[in-house]
Length: 390
Image (tube, rainbow, N blue to C red):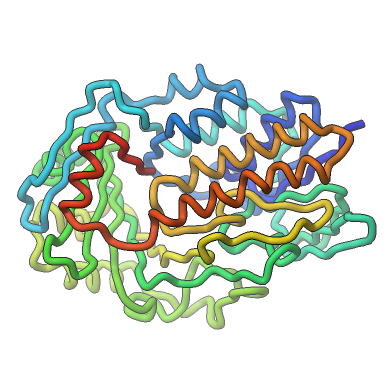
């Protein structure tokens, strides 16, 4: 019998891995901390890149289901300055290589493609430890444990599995984003809806200062925005609400965080000299703003081969949002699944082959994620037709 795989984390990467393993007859169990698939929002738009996410979905035999999710016209792009002046505009002519889907809808397709019971909801990993012979024990918040011969950490930036392989801890990069959402924008916020256009808006300060925002048009006239806030985390919260309360990188006071009202007020003050149709993305939100401090792992993060365990996605190569994260996580999952299928009787050979491809892929993505581009650089980038996002 092929070695069963224990996957920690039911994000896109972990689910692609489970799906590819299922297609090849390899049993897998996915443990997810969330109590249900709908326990929390899954984020907004995601563009699936031909060279990464699309290949992963092909390996998962879900190309047709993916095509049914594509939102027409969402590859349209507008680049504005802080006063609302259009610097660059590109329509969606249907030839782009990064069609847009809703992240939550894509996750649902992946979940529906797995056998019932594959994902164990409300199964929060709290610790892992190595046993003899390449086995590992995972402890869960409910007091249960499981022992596995093959453990995969698909559990994101604050991975519980990573310490088995690496001492690396995510580091704050000096800026955060605040996520906001406006519903029925064409009726209730027409000037903002017009500024965003039919797809993606990027607005930035040509004078620098590290201020810029991105907004996407979702289904039903919804606009989702991500506004950059530079400087120490303490400008918005004295602790990082995204980090764990125990273990590596733990925050010291998990209850000491900013309130939604304070977040909006501080961010609105920073963008006070921006056009009102743009600042409405900050002040007119219909949901509580979500503060997301940005972290990364050192470029080229890697580890020596440890029997019976590996990582994928942000657990392996966390970087600031650069359009590659979810796509690479899915490609990681597909690559690992195919490597295990190619070496069914030699797990270590499979893991070594997978990691040989993983490390340079993650390092390459990290090199484009480090700084804020100028308007001229963005225009040149978009003009080349190789825009990424999501």
